Amino acid sequence: MEAFGIQKTMRMGRRYSRFQWGKYEDHRRALVDHQFEALLAENDGSRSSLKMEDGYLLDTSMSLPFLNELLEEGEQIIAQRSGRNERDDRYRSFFRNIVPPDALDQYPSLLKFVTSSAVTEIVSNYLGMIPCLSTWIPEGVRFVESGIEFDAESHLPPRDSQLYHIDPYCSPMVYLLVLMQDTTVENGPFTWMGEAASEKVKKARGYWQKGHGYRLTDDDVYSTVGREPEMTLTYPAGTVLFIDTSRCLHFGSRNCVEPRYQLMYGLMSPCRNDFSDTERKKIHYNFPENMSGSELRKLILNKEYLSS
Image (cartoon, rainbow, N blue to C red; front, top):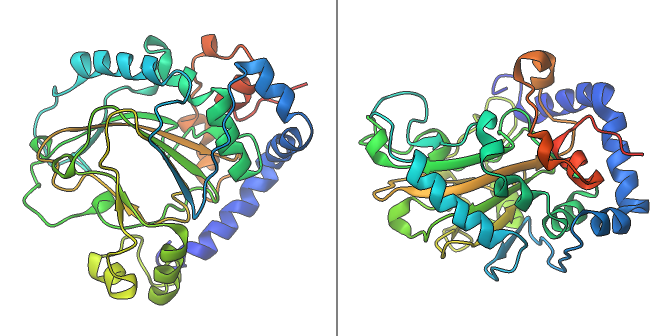
């Protein structure tokens, strides 16, 4: 992608994906235009007037549906699954998903929350379509534990996702981040800039153009817009961030002196901007069917679902 240009590669991937999956995206757009109210009501009836602006929405209200249930179950997950990894030097060993896709049916609140009407309304209004959970990179649902105690290379400078970047998988897309425990600077918080500041950096640095890599150094970013636009997700448990990571610069998991526990959802169109669907049989997985009672849930949990 660096040799050819990330932007050009994304355009090619989008054309390819539209050829294969375009009818599913078109269907989801039509549902927002013509049947959205009925779908929200038939699901759980919760609603939200919150909107994403400048590429993100930070919600500290603790009012989203199923959030308390999610936090309670999250504490069980942390008690059962955290801190059991050996220190190693694997790729991104500082960042681990402790609830793999095949274990999601053990923790029903993880899908109840993301398929709620209120959450779906916020995301769908931003995307202009009913989204689906990603079935490849990034995984649609990740319960992430970050910590330097797992990373044999923690003495090295920031690397990989610890550096500023913008995601090329699908654009627009929404990452939904939920803090599962109180988070401070010692937890290596998720850090981001809004779309306007990110676009300034992107243009000034020739980011996504031929010959430019995926990661940016702090100097690359701060020399263009300074540090004023930078925001950190240092908030109490239950704080929720909706962010378009295909338009907003971001990084995370730097210097996690204390473990960070964060739930991450990848919500997007069935049509991606990469070629991951060329190996669909290898990478595609299904979300638990026992959570797919309503039409809205079926659409979110199954990218190939066509409602009646």
